[in-house]
Image 1 (tube, rainbow, N blue to C red):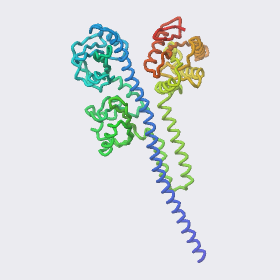
Image 2: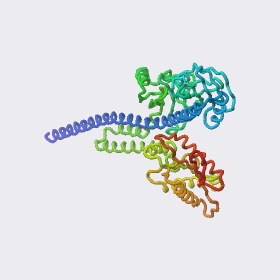
Image 3: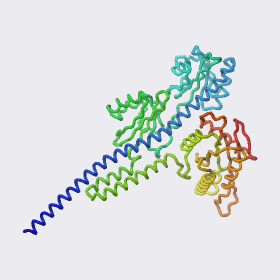
Length: 491
């Protein structure tokens, strides 16, 4: 009897202990699930903030670059008196050198004279009622919302800057670009094409829609028309859009859960909206969460091990997300977007740098002669040579195909020329075939930082180096071409 009572007592103690462990494990699992869900949301917000900031920077840089072109031209127009035909002649020439589809001058009476990229001129055009013209007349440099092109099919964004002569307002210098110039930026693949980007205004109206669309309805003019976020969230979001604040939330569409992030572009009240399926951003996390729920009855030690495993997966997942967003998958170098971001940071610290664009001569022929696999070997060899040639205060990236970019310290032209010559010699030693007789050659275009005043229009900086590279391709005597003060010079 004593033995039986003792056995029952031991069974009861064991059952109570097991129940206690089970309850503790269940509570721990629930608390862990809540904590990790919050961590998941925080990580998603950080990732989306980083990505949208990168795209926002590209959009703002393009806007400011266009306005800088017009501001420089307005200074020229304001220096001396000109007839309307003289002004249009200047604008027609300038139009061939930029991405505008149309340029013009609007007098203080609101009447404009325009010329497009084909040389077609439009006279006595009433533009004074346009909001962006009125704003520019007040002395502001302005970017318009997307509007229908009154002279052609499609939509455009317009730019306007005031023109002064001796302090007196003469009118507004205006230009138009296809709205697809911004659409191309936000249509670039992000997170392997699973994310969606749009530009809206502070009322939620679509300004520019990506070619990669979550919202397929072309008649939908406002992001709130689709009832994505729910009435309660939408009311809160509208008030935050009016004040220029960031906003992060989630929604479900067609049984798929999404994260959504709103980042202010800080011009015209525009916002960049990024939407991405939660499973695309946190696939490993969600899988391990389900595992954690399935094994919550196992001992606490297993739960601790599971937490460590989840943490490792989250860390690896974050590293993978960064790799996809910032690095070239073939060579492991920065992609252009990350290169530009890091380069702008370096240029804020010091300005004695040169941008070098390098490509392989007749790379297409290399692929055809040796095969695409050998072509990839060559590209990885070029990347390794470039990495070995730069120090910690310099950068390199792969832009596309066989084009590479380097931001290198610049003191003397000859010193940089010697470094580039060594790089090209190292590249030429790449052996793609045991009996290879073909010599691999490279071209370099170089643009140095000149008259640095605290900011650099990196798109223009890149274009100048690219122009030098194109000149190097056509130069049989010199594979290295420098652009110095907008003039081409050999090594």
